[in-house]
Image 1 (cartoon, one colour):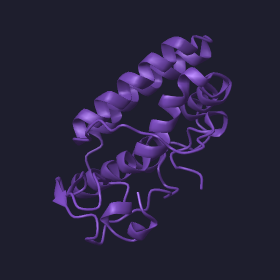
Image 2: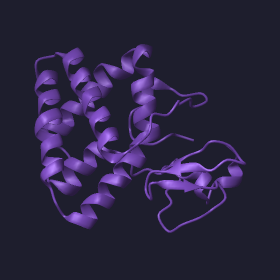
Image 3: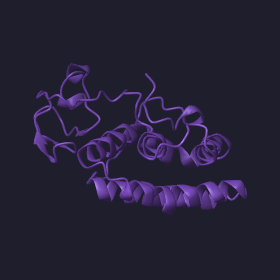
Image 4: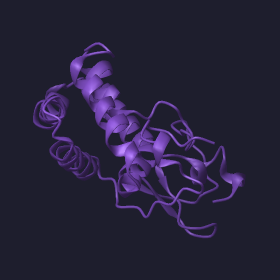
Length: 180
């Protein structure tokens, strides 16, 4: 993708860039736009507010940033996922798609103020993954995390993307943004 689109649709986390002369899908507006178009909801791909787990747990459910569930999810990332290249895809997806998911969660919540869906995600996936981490069952926690991501992408209408980030360092990844 060209740097030309830094402040346009083609450079936004919500936009599925397909090429310079092709309309791409915007998951915010759920329609197709040219990469050079602009709007008021754009978030650059290196946007730092992309931790959708923190968005759900803290911003919507009002729990503390240092709560047990978040600390266990961070432990899963640091002690397990970042230790093996086989999880590079999971971490890369979190960094690339995370800001889009966080933005769509914020959008839906700001429109509805309904916590039910997000409480369900928390109870079904995050608490379960956290409990697995406490038992050092990192594989079980990873499986629950992957189920959650797939559920969120389905619910939010995010299409599957082939993600490749040049020089991606999986040993430091998984924070909800792509380091530049």
